[in-house]
Length: 82
Image (cartoon, rainbow, N blue to C red; front, side, top):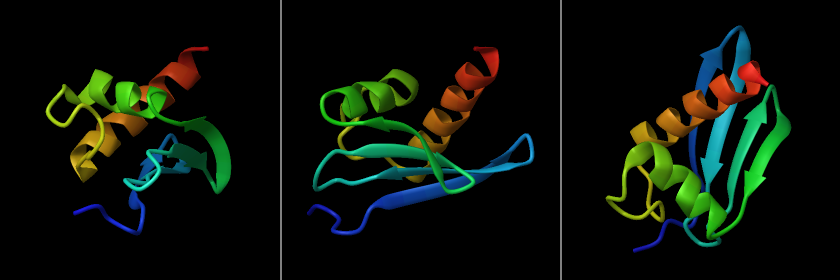
């Protein structure tokens, strides 16, 4: 069964409040830093982004909290490097 509400995880990274939010209904994936949208993906890109850090267990379509946290930390590392 699909979740109606988005799956959301948060973390503190370098003093900033970061949130990853994924909607199983639409496949939309958002990263927000202190409430501001930093990145946004839609299928199939959202699924590939999740699968790239989490493996292909659900092909990125039903991520767990741990998988979203892995994506969040990976994306923040990429943003710091650029």
